[in-house]
Image (cartoon, rainbow, N blue to C red; front, side, top):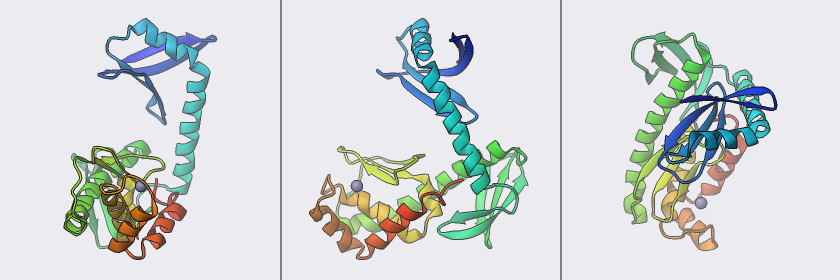
Length: 236
Ligand SMILES: [Zn+2]
């Protein structure tokens, strides 16, 4: 629900998402604005008070999120014909108007169908969702390939939108992968899959852990470095 507070004479609008949680999370998204996730039992005036206390910080977070989007817009335009990396290769983006959001690779192009191809935000959202689906499919295949070799299987598999992490593994053995990996070369994606599977044995980054990774992928260091150097390219 939309809420408005006045802080230091300024009007601050935010979207409140009441959820089953114990803490309050503040988020600033370009275009979507400020989002606050709060426990259901927390009275609205208390949420408002928390937002008011953080008004300056939230305004700064929002400005930074918008500046970040503006930077990506310049570095990675998503108009018809723009280059887009898929599995490490440059494809030309083709925008097609259509009712259902779909994306498919065809002959060096990525054909993205969506209802509103004229909206930059809608194109970015459609790219994100179609490429996330592709990432999940691809990551499942690679997990199936490596699980018998490594000898352990993860619990839940999830695709995340993360700024600076390619993957993670929880103590319970659930694994998360960044959807942007679908833009990286297949070997780089494989490295992250192997990395997270090896955490099912070694929940650390000890020499023993890296020895396991290296057993599966002797040249893993090349791809580890590649991801570090190209993080900015795998975005839009
Ligand atoms: Zn790790």
